Each structure stands twice: as C-alpha cells, then as structure tokens.
Image (cartoon, rainbow, N blue to C red):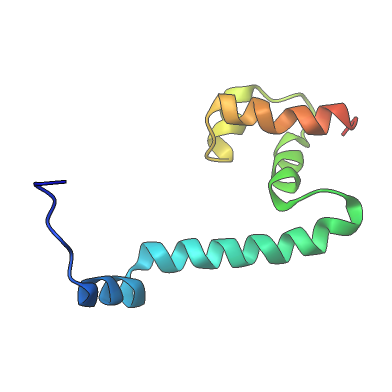
Length: 89
C-alpha cells in the first residue's frame, strides 16, 4: 500500500451524500426487500418473480435473450433457474 493515496474523510462524506450510484444501489436494495416481503406468501423472491415473468411466453425462449432481458450472464441465469426447476416452477 505504499503508492496508495489516502482519501480524505470529507471526500467520503461528500460521495456518501451525493453519489448517484450509491443512492441507486441503496434504493434498489430497499425495493428488493419490499418485493421480497410481498412475494413471501407465494414462496418466491423478487429475482425469481422476474425470471418467471421473463419465461412466460407461448414458446420456450432461448437463454441468451432471457439473460439479456434480466441483465444477467448465462451462468448466473442457469444457477437462478435450478431452484425453480427443482420446485417444478
């Protein structure tokens, strides 16, 4: 860590209070918790709901377009599908 400059604490406070990225992430987590609580009675979370809705088409969709729609890579999509498949959803 010899070449690492120290960021002043005042900068940290400024970023905490004004950074759109941090605020968007915080809002996304809060919304995810709200949706998770709303979906709890049916036994799924918000990610699973989004995945199920993206799959609800007349014909089975290819993995690539579903992954793109959900902003996931195909490996993550495959992992997310496994618990739903085990439950017969």
